[in-house]
Length: 254
Image (tube, rainbow, N blue to C red; front, side):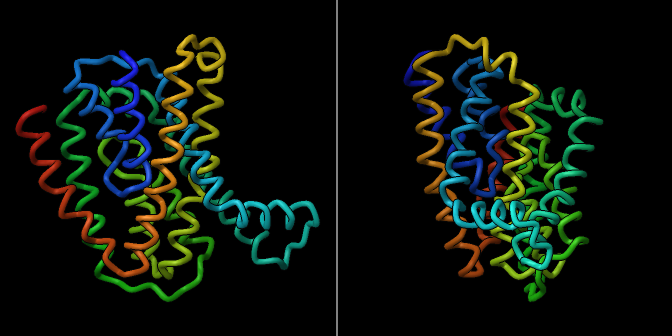
């Protein structure tokens, strides 16, 4: 892998991690087309970059959550949000740990990526069926957490599946958007902890730093795009990309 390839992969990661079109699926396709076998550690650095984008974008929400935790103000809406994040993180962790080997096996399968993109397209399209008006609750948090766990599979978008699940659960689009991205923070941190040894011993140097920086900037832009599209009630339009992309992958890379 040279620097230009690292930059391309970082852009793919940063944009597709938060756009509802699956970063894992696009990274598999990009690496296949470039004939690369990228170390898992490099992927971790890219995910850390996109994590920086989320923290930067939602820093006020994060600060409010931490403040409510320090004061143990259980009546604060931010404390309740923290509880919902914990509720949503539990099924994600359980699914990830129980089916880790299964998910890892899918990353070498173009067919799995293609099917995953089609599933993402169907979820995005289904989000148009219901306009949620409810606030986030424990059940909707749990459902969104389950979908985040399923989205470990390549081709299934994490943001696309969690936001769609939230909307279908009746959650209003503002809360579905915010919760989806805040829920990603412990998931990314957990994946980083699991790979900490490899991360610490990495000698990727410049590639890792440049990749993480590009993923952070492009990831921030992607979050902004998702918010604008979702709030304008055109979130389902991303399905127009996912369906043909999935079919192309099945035709040429499966």
